[in-house]
Image (cartoon, rainbow over all chains, first blue to last red; front, side, top):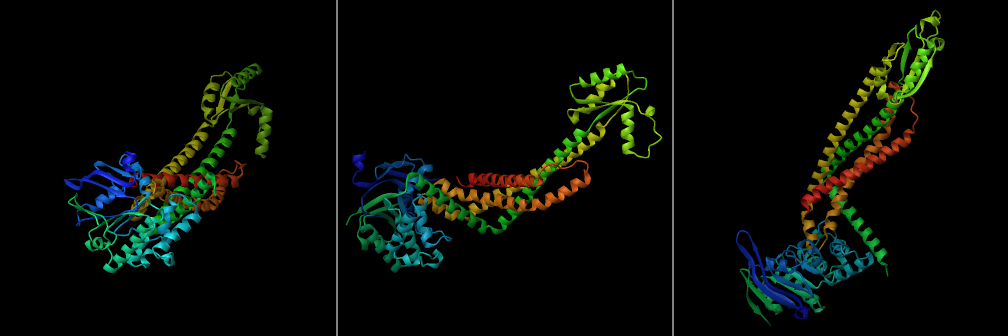
Length: 229
Length: 300
């Protein structure tokens, strides 16, 4: 199994997830992601993108199927221990999910604090991540003092600060205007060029066409197409 | 480079600092509930402190009164020396008896004159000889009286058990009332802290979700809420400890004015310190238990 995984950072086999009463959000989806790849998961609203991202990032458990991240089989890890998997991943959400009472610096640094790193390391890594997203000067501000694009940049900094195996982004531009969305995509490309693997769910065809990266198209929970540029 | 031990200590300190900070934010965010919690915890812990005071003073007074409780058995005027000696020996052999002291008519008269100086007309012959029996335990007075009543040569016995009984009954009632008050307020304290913690968890639901999504462990999410309970207990304990000093002074005065014949021979400042520490400890434990109930229920 290890040899099958090698070269791939993520392998999903036949992932299925249903919700009562009778909704199959993800229906037997299989996919794989290479190291340092930038993969799009595209589909209309309600196609199952968010559920798929949630399954891939161990935020939810599939009803059936297998998931490998790095060299680990993830599906057999109990949900109660799922946080250990999530620690090795980075996730960016559509609604930013920042903590209002924490400053920009604290919002990013707490992803390292919970891992128990020493203060100096946390400080340096946080400032490094904030520099990368261009928010070093705003580290002492609170999320409400930032624009939507800046808030999403903070979320990106938090997601990359612990050097994740894969950076998942679920509709990261969903709450942003056209210009800010493309600025954010430039940031994702910059992060990808530095060697990070990115899996991004989006319904924005313009972004997908502009970036020209491998894209998996899903509809009604099923994988219906795969576009390679 | 840090050693593993130093690294662990650093993590512990970092975690503690963060948990305390977040507990304080929860405390501030639910200001009115926190205020209510502190009032209830202060009342509950103050009632605990006062009950401990009552219990210590009560026990001390009970022991002192018990030591002074003596059964006096008067001999018939016709009792011979042989009969008196036999009664003394028999009384000493009663298992509940600590000590037996023979009091002659002459000594009894002398003591009487000492207490009542204008009693010049009383003669030795009008006071019969007696024995004074000290019980091992003040609760055994009735049993001793029953035994002595069967001895030959005994004319009458002074029954002090009724006085003792009414005193012990009063102490028991005070204990019961105090314990009921503690249970009442302590239950209120637990419910209040548990509710405040639930409210804090609810108001932090967004932050909790974020922490869980990012990979926080259960402890990382839960501990600040446990500390919130500790805050309520600790602050309530500290305020009630501050109140304990004037309360204990007042209690001391009341005690001395009612039971002036039982001198207090213990260090009341040390007692106060022990009570304050107990109150603080119980407050912290109560706070942890109460918040743990909510954390277990709402943070699965």
